[in-house]
Image (tube, rainbow, N blue to C red):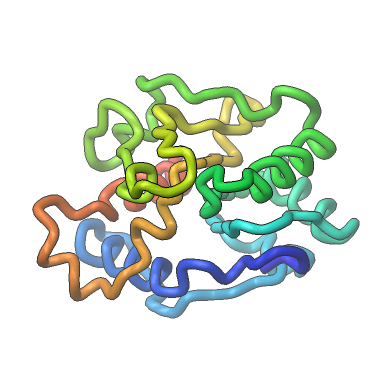
Length: 195
């Protein structure tokens, strides 16, 4: 949770991803979603955090310091742009925050052979989302993900693909999908916990 913007988009997504972790892995999973303020020191105790939105991202001084401390000390943040380039407000403002904290070009494209794509399920490239092909916005399909590496470890995974909206449905409805689209979420969490 951050003070600016709208951090609580995709309200059903966390439960759906938690369900997938229980369904596919042997991880001991607390089924309760934990909402932690970005400025709260409790964030430093989490191995994995998710940050999303589609409005302005402007970290307070406390949020910026905590974010930087978290990723530099082994934390992993999955950041998902739910705006999908309609006006690019989330992307532009989040990328500006990252540049202020970690310098220019801190979010290069991940190669298609990055271990993220094989950390649990096998993917040749980042899965496309239906939100990239929905007929509004620019219909831009991002064929890549970006990330911040610290000491050879991916610390921030950055997506403009709007995975959060793609996974924002009641987990019981997964049975209607030909292929469970939350499998990539499992990869992200498993990578965060094992690399």
